[in-house]
Image 1 (cartoon, rainbow, N blue to C red):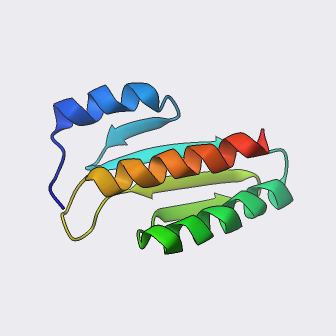
Image 2 (cartoon, rainbow, N blue to C red; image 1 turned 60 degrees about the vertical axis):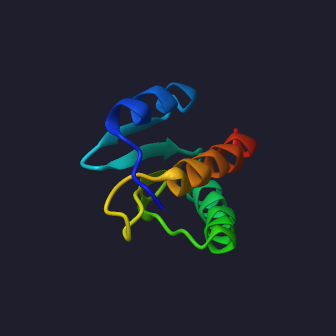
Length: 96
């Protein structure tokens, strides 16, 4: 999987307002009404990650979910990261 250059990453992020590019990865933070809703979204995201065989770095404190996406084998952002970000957006959107 080939790396996407920074200029193209920034252009593509225009479609993903919850995400930003920094430290060679895509980052997002989502806030839910409560822990149960956050954990529910994390569970659905986990199934999608397994389906795509692509796994994020993430953390959760109560109702906040922080996600960082990069393709470790490529040492940066690839198409796999945007594909997973799009799936995550769809999952989180359902929660709203």
